[in-house]
Amino acid sequence: MTSAQQPAPARPTSRDVARAAGVSQATVSLVLGDKWRGRVSETTAVRVRDSAASLGYRPNLAARSLRLGSTRTALLVVPALTNEFFARVYTGAAGVAAAHDFGVVLYPSPDGTGPARDPFASARASLDGVIASSMATEALGALRGAGLPLVMLDSDPADPGAAAQVNLDIADGMRQVTEHLLDLGHRRFVHLASAVDSWTFAVRAGALRDTVRGVPSAVVRTVPAALDVTAGREAVERALAAPGPLPTAIVCDDDILAAGACKAVRRRGLRVPEDISVTGFDDLALATAVEPELTTVRLPAEQVGERGMEALLAVLDGRPAKPGRLPVHLVVRGSTATAPALP
Image: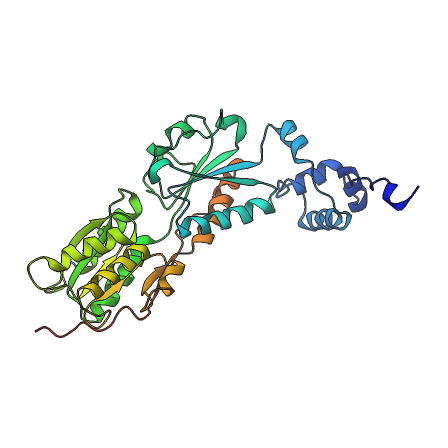
C-alpha cells in the first residue's frame, strides 16, 4: 500500500482522553463541556484539558447537540452591520464562544431599529440563546416568543425582559466629555443628537443636561440628525445659520456625527478647534482618520461582546452573570481647545 493509500489515523475519542488523564469519560465530558466547577478539582480539569490537547481531541459537536438538546449556537442581534462598534462587539462575543465550542450568528435588525424577525423557521430549534446589542426588548418580540434566554447589551437596565444585561457607563462618558469642555471655558453648546430613539442615546442627552445644569451662563441647544456624516453636516449647518451667537462647542452622540459636524464648521469658514470645538463618542477608527483627530469617548466594544457571551453561558449553566457596568474613558485629541474669547 502506498503512502497515498494509507488509512487516516483514527480520530481520538473521549475514551482515549479519559484513559490518558486517568479519569472517567463522565469527568472528561464535565471538563470539556465547561461544567466541572464544584464537581471536579481544578488539578483534574487541567489534566483533562492537557490530555485532550496533546491527543488533538475535538468533541463531536453534532452528536453532543443531539444528546443534550443543544445547538451550541447563539444569535447576536445588532441594529446594523456597517457600524464598526457592532463589528467589534461580534469579535469579542465570537472569541469567547469559540473557547467554549459555541458559534455566533450575526443578524441585523431590519432598518436598524426593528422589529427583528425570527431569522430561522424556529429559533428555539436552531439556537441556545440570543444576545442583543443596543436594542429594546420590544424589538425582539419574535425571538422572545421562542422562549430563549436573552442577554441585552448597552440597553435599558430597567427593562425586565432580559435574563442578563451588560452595560457601559454611558452617562459617565458624557459627563467626562462635558466636564472637559466646561474646564476649557465652553458655555455655548450644540448637542448633535442621534435621531434614533434608544436608551443609550437618551442617557447621553440626560447626562449632558445634568452636567451643565447650574453652570452659570451655560446653554445647550439640541439638534437631532440621522446617524450618518451627511445628516450630521446638514444639521450643524442649519444650527450655525440660526440667529444668535455661535456655539463654542458641538457635542456629538457618536464619531460619525462628529465627522459631519467638523465638515459643517469648515464649510462656514470656521476652524476646529480654534473657533468651535467638536467631540465624538465611541472612538471608532474614524476618530483618528479626520483632521484634527477627534476628542471622543472610548467604548470597550470587544469587552462588551465578551461579557455578553459570558453572561449567556452563565445563564445557560444556571449561574449568575457577572454584575457591574464597564468603564469608558475620555480620549483628548486635537478637536477640542480653550473656548474663544467672547466678542
